[in-house]
Length: 501
Ligand SMILES: [Zn+2]
Image (cartoon, rainbow, N blue to C red; front, top):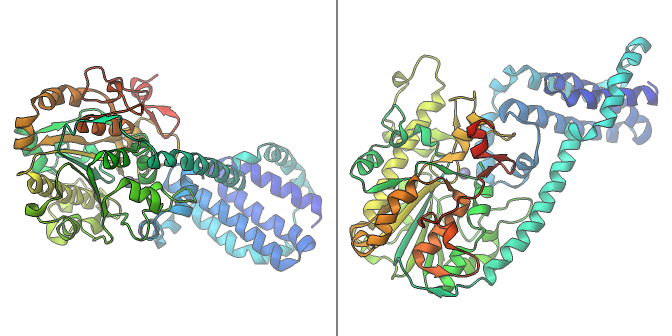
């Protein structure tokens, strides 16, 4: 095989890779051709290794197209390199099974990848090569639309975001309240995980997945937000936005005790690594500036975690205090996030052909309802306000044929399942009696469109904090709340999408 021929093959493959449906064919050409080229230039072993690495990029790209409905992008690349090890393991168990060989593009890629070392002696007739020269030219002109190109640009973008985040995190060490009235003595923020609000009976789902929330909603003691939207569909990205105004550090410096109980990211070993670097809470200095206490162990089930980590109800931390409780919620795999004796729904509750994952998800949601109820009961005798919301939603085989989350440009279906989130506020009897102003403001607040990036402003308002970093227009409790453009996935205006613009 001559060098020009090999180059034509590579370029053609790169062109075809921009067309997802032809991805497998392209991988074939990409794998077979450079092996021969690199053999002459670099020697066979190194040539095969390099080709194999490029082939892996292609395989990953096709995999993402199949399961995330998007080729490789910055979000996926960050996820691959930076997610918590337990999440990666959980992810592998969910997706990597013999069943994926049923996806023909993936199995073809895999076979070709394994054939790489034997491709050295391969050759093509001249007529076919002439035909391939046209897509070859196109491919060379659009390198950025190929898996290797996408990998490089996604990596560069992740690096840029890292640097930006580092600058943003520095405010954790400096931002201070001008004044703090300690308006609410005990603020409890409960962060759910992967909670699709359309699978909650409290939001109209056909099965009774949230009986406790339903009952409290009917009794008007939970203020359900009708229209809360998350900016992102990945935990780390959502945290980055929700915590971008450093409210834990501001409140701690103002005099609040700020406890962070996370059943996903314990202290000690660091919060979590993201974006190829570290999240703000894995930095010891920032973590200490933000929190008075962090747990060091997690549990498989949220109720067990809370029983192990929250102090006894009669020995709660002295006010003023903010408790942040971060649950494992309905994270995949769903069947691992509810105890077997909480299996309430069976496959008899679903139409023929429904994937079993839907049943497990609904059971996990019902267990989560029990966990949330136990949190409210825990704080019932205190002067507490509890704000619950999920970090993001989840696909559960509703409008899109997937579970998990998609990573492409979200359309209406993905926006509904992955970015619309459940959210509510609850006040204890003592809190309600002492804060008629908050109680009066809540029904209107809950009816407003809300962008969960603004969560920090609500919390600072509840604490009675003022400073240059916040304003009434950003607190959803205020009649003058101005909801910003609700951009999801960094590029789509949710409200315009919903309006069909
Ligand atoms: Zn999450």
